[in-house]
Image 1 (tube, rainbow, N blue to C red):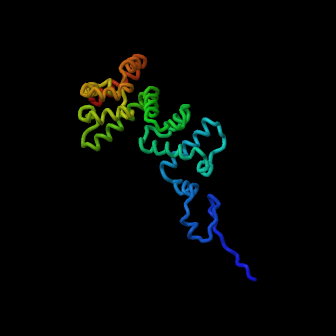
Image 2 (cartoon, rainbow, N blue to C red):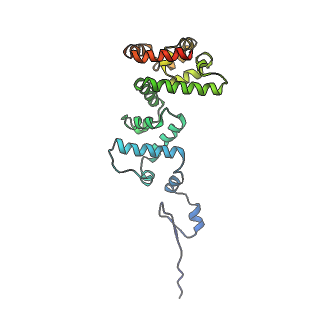
Image 3 (spheres, rainbow, N blue to C red):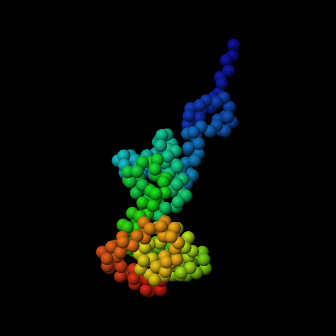
Length: 230
């Protein structure tokens, strides 16, 4: 009696066995799907956030591997956060990831818009005036390129909807807006709902106090405004 040996093909991810190689090739289990998606942008960001979380919060000295990430019960939550980050294109993504994982906010709440709003508010209140101006002018120059204009005409000709979004997103700093005539004239053209949407960013009481405390920075901004004819 001749006994034929049956060849089997085993999935390296879930250990399921198949008698035909082509069945193994088309087989997609959850772990295989996660490894196939390894290089996708939102997954890369999710893995980065996962690694930072264990580094900063769990104080894990060993670098997490992608295999550990793929097998984590928190994989989907981190990948969802990766999609959120990819969609909003945050200011200084690395800083946003670090700030978020250290915030103490529950992972399930990381994709809430109000968390990013808190990050932007924290950023504009703690960054140096040089960083604020550099980011603002860089963004205004990009607007000028897209609209066949010059950057120092941003406040005069940008749509109020676009300006409100840019301010809300932290791309244009109150340092420039509140210390230039064209910036203040732009705000005067905002509708009430637009002013409400940026009220936490442009709060006059907060910035009046900041300008008073940072006299040297204020003079620096005023010189930039004067030289650029804003």
